[in-house]
Every structure is written in structure tokens, then in C-alpha cells.
Image 1: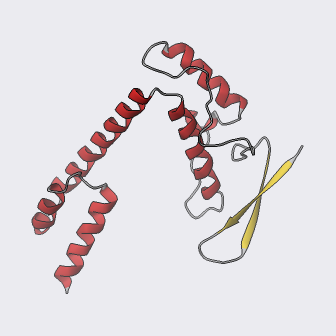
Image 2 (image 1 turned 90 degrees about the vertical axis):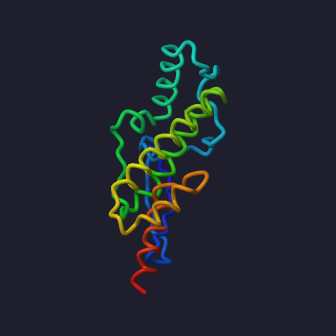
Length: 164
């Protein structure tokens, strides 16, 4: 069984910590794997979903990456040395699937995702106490609406300003 070594450098130290994954490990990436790679011959354009789905599943299974979409390969703890590699492989799998969607479908997916993020942000802002009213109004006036992380950061800045 061949083995590859992936070097991980944590944020807490300048020392590299080698982490080994054999070629059958779900975190292993081949040298030929790239973000631009296409898994299937035909892009999904809204028609023929069962055949497209079967092709995607077969391709991911052949690459030993099916567990990333069926929930069997869960994200490790953020402090785990495996988290960075898991994230890298997970992003690669997502990229491969997006590359198998027609541009129209991918654009619609991006718009839907942004819409859901905006809804979550608005729900979060509505749930704030009245002392955050001015900050909430300022955030809601932004175009486009920021991510929840950015909004939270802005609220923390506002709170810090009030403490000073």
C-alpha cells in the first residue's frame, strides 16, 4: 500500500507536523486532483437528474470521496491537525460538484444560498436587544447585506465603542 505524507503547520508553532494518509484514506488527494477537474461528461442543466446523480456518485466513489457528501466523513475538531486537510478535500469535492452544474444552475444555487444567508442575518438582527438598534439599522442599510460573521464583528465594534 503506498503512502503519502502531508505536512501540516499549525498556527501555534513554526514546527511542521507530518501527517500521513495512505491512498485509501478519504483525506488523500492525488496529484491529478484539481479544483477545475470535471467528474462527469455532461453538465446538469435541470434535466436528467437521476442519471447525472448516478454519474456523480460513481465518480466520487471511484475517488474514495463519497463519504464527504453522504455524511460519513464529518469535519474533525477545529483544533485537530486533520481539520486543515479535511477542509481542503471537502472544498475540492464541492468544487467538483459545482463544475458539474451548468452555469445557470450554479448561479441560481449561489443566489439561493445568499438569500438564505440574508434571511439568517435578518433573524439574528431582529433578535438583538434595543441597545443595538443603531448598529442594526446601519447593517440593514448595507448593500449587499454582509455575512453574519461581518455583522457580528460590527456589533462587537459597536459594543466596544459604547464601553469606551
